[in-house]
Amino acid sequence: MTEASKNPPWRDAIEQSIEKNKELKYSKYVQLVPLSRSVFIWWLHHQGSSKRWNKEKATVRPDGRPANRTVVSRGFVDGTDQLQFTADSRSEKMGDVAHQPWGEICWYFEDTWEQFRLLGLVGVIGCDEEDFRKQEARLKAWQAASPKSLRQFVDPPPGRPRAPKEEFEGDPPNQEEGPVETFCLVTLEPKEVDYYSLKEKRRKLYKLGEEGEWSEEEVNP
Amino acid sequence: MTEASKNPPWRDAIEQSIEKNKELKYSKYVQLVPLSRSVFIWWLHHQGSSKRWNKEKATVRPDGRPANRTVVSRGFVDGTDQLQFTADSRSEKMGDVAHQPWGEICWYFEDTWEQFRLLGLVGVIGCDEEDFRKQEARLKAWQAASPKSLRQFVDPPPGRPRAPKEEFEGDPPNQEEGPVETFCLVTLEPKEVDYYSLKEKRRKLYKLGEEGEWSEEEVNP
Image (cartoon, rainbow over all chains, first blue to last red; front, side):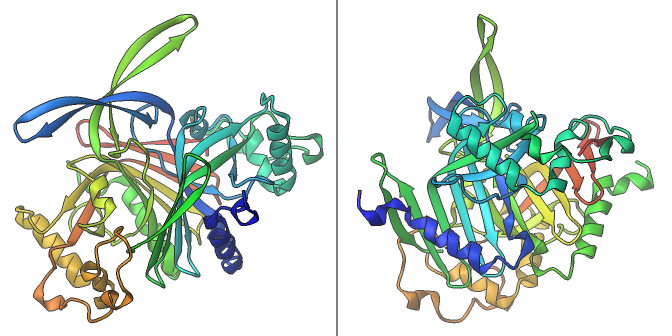
């Protein structure tokens, strides 16, 4: 590998967009579609008057419908090109994410009119993670979080019938004691990146090849 | 039906959020996940040491992976609770949308820290639409668009290898002559709405019942 190939080509573009849009508090809010399990699908292919069954592998949410949600980008996992987010192990989001499913991030930068769509493999690092480096990334994310934002991890379970107001009050967990059990780190390892500049009317597709090299193609926006 | 049931309960909430966030130019940008075809999926259910095959109906993108994109909300189709967006018939987005698939909109309002997730049926109204009322909605959307934004519908085909710069220049189509062939209206008819207020730590789930009535449940955020 040459020196230049260390950073995938889309990484510089996204770092620039983050830098240019840093004054915007909400440029960190991105949309994530996690899909939950690998399944085989059979579908009836119609061609003229003939029909045949096709088979494909796909990933879907437990109820077979899409799930789109806003998450807060926490940048990249140190030393990798994986995007990172935090999540509560008790949330539906976690039910939607299994081992190595596909997910897609849609990140729109308002100031510069740029959109990145990052398609890749989603991973979850929870309290029972045995990989030391992954557990370290989870600990770093815990330490980097604002103390106030940690309160949600000890709030009553998300999605369950509304608990009394008092149960949402009180101190957040002690940050120095390390992550609480419900605190998870979610990662997305991009395999395809679709970059779109509305202002410049330009669009680029980046794809990771089988041998780990990124290709780049300029297409019509 | 009583007078009160004419507007679904989430509609007032979203109208208020639109009103409160109207100063924000980008509060119109929402994320859409269109999924493309109905398929049956079979999946292996593991329970302890036993396994069994389950069958479900699902909708997926042609390649079986999710597709998340930013679209600009154009409000609601007159006299309905369907959200509307415009799209180019030549774009991938259209390949992702078939007749009556499920789709989900994720709409985040920055000023008020509110998120709406609207899950429902997606429809496309193109130039060959025969339903007069649908064709009328498409015409209204064409007339309501800014002249400059219409230029994209006569630009070189999206997603194809980059055409010369000159082909993206020149006048937009004449708005008075009615919609060009590539101009489509995409609609989403909500069946489930998930409302989340980060500021107030409140969350409500709205679901459309089999008899057309909306139910409302308050859950933990």
